[in-house]
Picture (cartoon, rainbow, N blue to C red):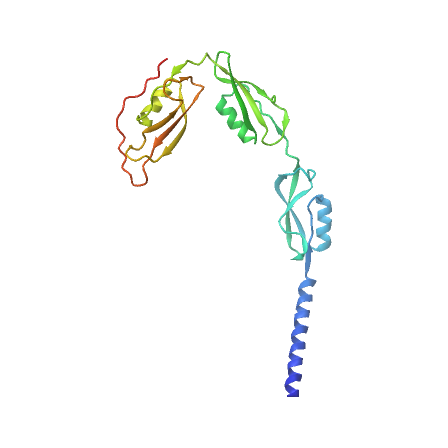
Length: 252
């Protein structure tokens, strides 16, 4: 019994000794991941050199409101004493470009559609779109704030758009029970646009048939006014049988 207990103690001691030796060996070849965020490249290289790791500066840059341009804004390894890396490991970093500076683009002479696309690309939003009779093409003639103004992300920009001539006024026709495919081109020939189409299942009505409209029949309307229609759409597996119908006539 004593021999068995002695052998067990020797085995436990050997296991503990092996574990401690292996842990010390691993730790001897590993270091804590340094925090390089906010450091200059020179300082970061010095820190990495002292730890025996390699700093790799990527070509990609990141905008930052908190970190000066040229300093490190991102690193690919999480810093901390619990995050060990082996000596010789590469740490990839990206540098800051400083705060993101946005300027209102020059939209003078652009069509309203192109102007809205350009605003979206700059992370800016459209506020008010105002029309004024000015002759010539329908283009942007002024913007508020003015172009080149420094603004923050998602700032709302108002546009003043000139129109060639006063938009002709019509009386809104009755679109109910007519096929959308026949109505749309007839309206567009008169400068009227269906801006929103919503679909709704409606038993007994063929797919593509208009079941509601706004503005309502008889309301005054011009090419500047959006038209919204609700169109029937049968549930999946329904039969499509759009009836032929004469195109609507907008009365001027």
